[in-house]
Length: 495
Image (cartoon, rainbow, N blue to C red; front, side):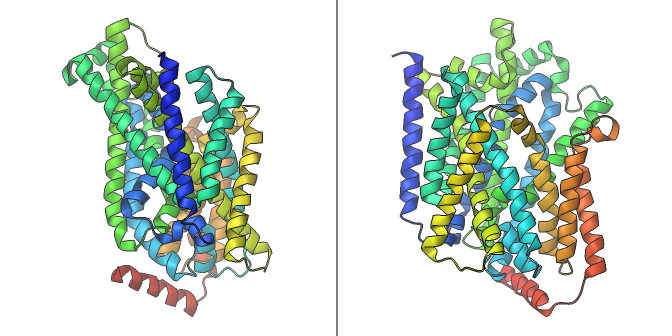
């Protein structure tokens, strides 16, 4: 049996498992709350792995190892920033958001929570938030489809469009029929596949090289600056470090991540989920880092040449493992891509149904109508995303580079202030969200001097400052808001 056949077997097994999980979740989905939030029944293990898998995408297995492979430890600061941001998010946002969203009209989306929490009678928060989510995540989903098509093209020599259709069809199928539970359960399988592959490759590679000392020695001979966390110490290196750490700010405003907090069984379980999530993330980041270093050492040691940087994970898997095992490692990359697409599809669908639809119509949805409309939204967004991905536009992929900053700057300070400051106002939230989005859009398209700093830094701070100032100027006492704020604190203490 040739290598391609082994890899095809691994892919088929993976696809079958994903579809079966979707069908199983279908029988557990009875209303819109189930479809969009799983009925708030996620245990800590599932919530943590689902948040991690839906967050990381193919960047974890290809982008991060490739960056460290090319530039050394200085690009590991991004992993440091993301790890700190993840811990802070689970520690300070997860329990409060879980408690507050249930107290505040049992909100099942981030925009609906902000609408209810701030008593926005104009519906502007809901509309603005829903539009931001719908637009950015449509492009995000499209970029994932591009990545899927490119993956099949690079790994199997398959036509780009055929590969894109295969990935899109599978992920849309289990998201469409199984909703939030299907996405969460498949995320668990995908998350375990990702971290297992990332740990296995450096472990076997270190055995191949003869241990840590041999590996570090080979890397040192290849490029002494690779092992320096400060790079060459230049101004550009400092900006790279600041930008890498600043990635952690984005976590507070990523709708597809923080919705997992809302789906926990109770606020108390955020602590257990935090431990699981951080353990998974540390193993994944360490694995990605040592995959890059071992790759540099092996190819300097064995062949004297370096392969394509972003393909180092794939190349190492094919070099060190049996073709069937290497096939499952390829599937791990696909798992990373698909887990993110499915999470973003569902959040976009929820924004359309729960926020935009309800903001513009007074018609009350029945349980069946809500689920049906949610599935129609998933299908509609998928078709639009596929049309955008079809020409393989670099513009779509370029947008993803600052989409994290866009969401982090638009929603991050807004979520934090809504959870921790009772005098936060709807006008302050709207002004801050718009400010953050505009700063990121402008800053991200200018280069040179101070504009080389990652746009999430000025965007986040701009939102925070404007939201605070406008809220101070527009605050009026509201007994309902104060009562609800106290109720969420009591619910948090009781849990």
